Amino acid sequence: MVSLGYGLIFVVAALALTVGLLTTTRGKGGGIPLARLASEITVASVIKIMVDDLKIIECDVPKCPLASMCKLRNVIGEGRSAFLDTLENYTIADLIDNRKPLRAAGWL
Image 1 (cartoon, one colour):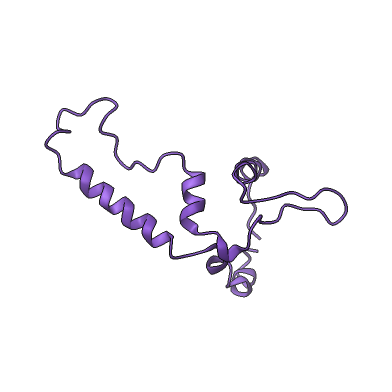
Image 2: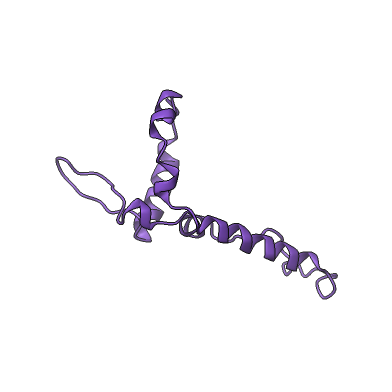
């Protein structure tokens, strides 16, 4: 069984609650389930919520002297867009449809 620190779980859960990915139910039988079906939550939407800034390179702070002629910014931006477009094709349900082998390997 893999163990994650409570601090990390708390931070991620708090953020997911704030943006409406999770909901809470108090009392006996309570818990923290998904607020929507796993098949309705794209991986891209989770990444965009959990990562404040998906910038791979920073050209403006401090201002890069090559910014006006550099082609790397556009190439990196295109790659970032392709990355997010790909993640839009997958949902949380796609990531959890293999519970049996994950459990057998000790991950669940």
